Image (cartoon, rainbow, N blue to C red; front, side, top):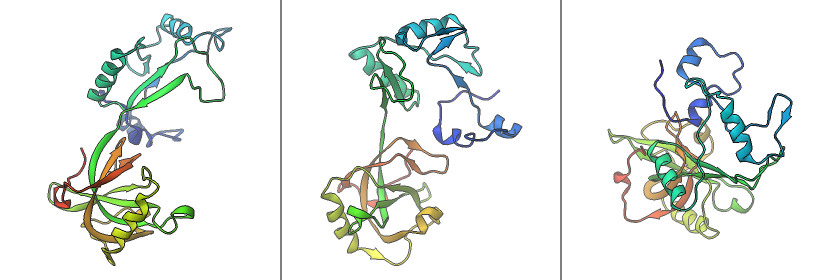
Length: 243
């Protein structure tokens, strides 16, 4: 029996588009069917019924078998209740919560404004070790920064890159600072991912960035990172791998 764990997008990618998974893959990457809405029952169409009505019908079906088919609970929340639920989600290692108006109806083919995903974000420091060339408005600055951190053994390892979160002016000042510390060879102790190695130009590992991210992928890279600024209160030697 596999132990239950929080959903992981990076692990689920191993099962995506695999129509006939081998028994070993099925064992290694568990996939549950999670039902959170009901669009119809037998000949009854529920598309125009309020969400809370569909949820009541879903509960009556008793589909949750405690194993492979799951019906997540629903709470009616406001104010401090929502804050408490976010805290519980964070403590449970979940990515966030999904909120929907109870009186809203299902809108086929579009992303409804009545359904909102509240994502929990993590933060970490990262050493800037390079950059990749940009296009268009970013042609004179960069398309993204290459990031690294130190392993417990002190080795500098790539943890991905970041290309969003910059203000309109920050790329110019960052590019000027990076140009002063460019180098011909990689400062990393371990080879970077091939996708990074093909396009990066390297810099001395002297700047520390403040990064927001969603989670760590299975290969140790930041998922959905966003740049928050340059840290002047941290030295590169103090930056360890995000946990």
